[in-house]
Length: 356
Ligand code: NAD
Ligand code: IPM
Ligand code: MN
Image (cartoon, rainbow, N blue to C red; front, side, top):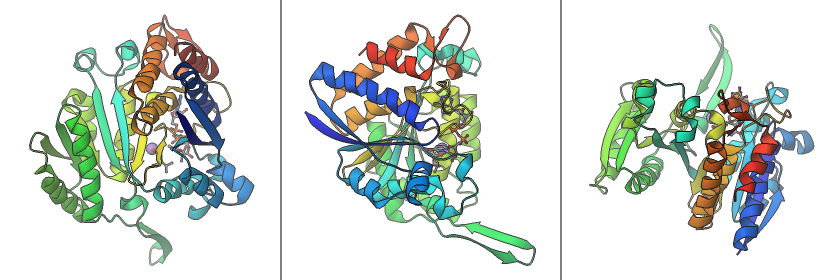
């Protein structure tokens, strides 16, 4: 089978980690007789530097014509003082919106091989961690009205969070569908004790739940959820939440499973071109030093194979290759512990590709 994959490497560690993922995908292609055509597109700071726009029209149109998109990461200190529309992150937000990607699926699993990297007490860790964060990706405060002005007490600024019934309904459905294939429990995380948008969120989620009588639904305030994630993560199966809360809670969930460098994600929409991106950022502090963990990006490719190309066997092959590599003691710095073999980004890619 032949597939076109747009690759937005982006900034910082973006190019290093996506190169490893492509290496692994090429081994998958060879083993199974597929053809993956990788087309580089510019996004983020890289695109700003070249075209003065963090999402050039050509990038969006190439992505739309592709079968899937792989994204590394965007952003960095170089562009931090730029105004809001000229920031690398805005390019990523426009790309998600442009492709209609409303559901960001972020699985956080503690591999038994990585227990040494888990910062939790062993009795808590031994109950296991297997959570799937279903994060709304096209609405909320990320896409609301924002502005700044001069007020009576100096400068003022605002960002508005709005959710419509339609937006909550479609992400809630995605969460319940996800739960049906898992442990059949949804924890919907909001701040309904304060926010009107959360109260709407809660009532729409309740409505959608009626179509899934086999799934247990629980509501939880976001402050409590942040605490419960480290107190007893085994209580969670699917976490359904807003764009901003999902951003924050998924970084927290990543750390309890070892490292932010491990977590993949799938950004899904109705149009059919989905995007696959690790949950971490461009890590400017370690960029260009062959130190970054490429596993989140490599596992994002496994999600691509599964969700976009319907290749369950090929997806499992990548996941098993990652597990074997960890089993044999190979570690990047972020997941290193005593007695293990510390290697760089590129060798991690080689080790995983070598086990395909
Ligand atoms: P970050 O995720 O880039 O880094 C946070 C910390 O985690 C750093 O210490 C970093 O070294 C480490 N880290 C991240 N990924 C790693 C990996 N694969 N292997 C090993 N260590 C890793 O978050 P930040 O520092 O808050 O943001 C840096 C830049 O990235 C900002 O410009 C931010 O806007 C951007 N960002 C982009 C994305 C994205 O493109 N999806 C996501 C988050 C942040
Ligand atoms: C992520 C990032 C992005 C987000 C930023 C860079 C816009 O933090 O993918 O988690 O907040 O969605
Ligand atoms: Mn984030």
